[in-house]
Image (cartoon, rainbow, N blue to C red; front, top):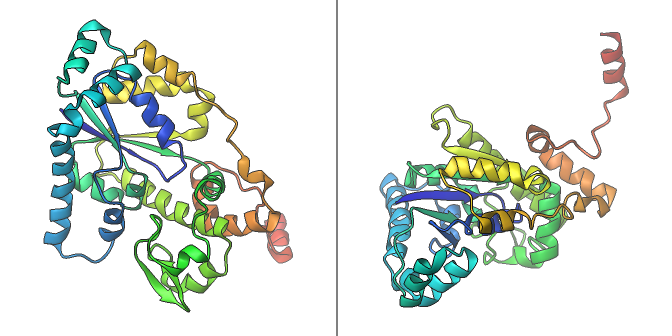
Length: 309
């Protein structure tokens, strides 16, 4: 039995990706219910080595325990899997008896693990990683529309998934993933810019972790969300190759559900807000191939220097 982990900032297309992968009959796809969302925050703090190692071992054991639990072997779970990925009469009979075989591959998704990709590599060194990324401005726009994240009200406590640890600045909590000297700048920013700030941290951590020379070639598959929904067939083939899986009708049906309507949704936001977001995360946007909507204008002296060579 093998493990694979889907990583990507929240609202980057991880849910659609998991629905596609769950259509493969020999996989078990599970969204983040085994690992408390606080763990990715905690492991990025200055922990003792034995504490960190205990959390890493606990993550791997939680995945294994799930596959031997009544939750996995329940008749309801077996029938739901068969409905999503029909596998013939024999599989249906097994499902009705609640006799599920162990999957060839377990795929786990927890978007907030994007805060700590190194922890994933340490906990599951042999796992295949699928990393999906999306324009951070669209991610932030979707986070606000769906969850209303990082508002002033939500910065008054540490209950949100986005901020389980933070430092108190004037009665508000600044998330730990904000630079030490930029707390006031963060608090003076709109929730949209704050959400882009979180995206910036996540994508930079994943980029650093997954492009490091020590990470085995072929271990990580990078998927650009916009490419996925525009050309799902090509990305689908990449997924199958990465996981060593074979296509099936249910898998193709899920790929055909891809839609491009969510691309560029941030364009309706006010110019000042988008400019502020691009000042926060411009290098990360450009690093991933997303052009800035409002490139910074060079000072006149810089323009003259450039013109004169």
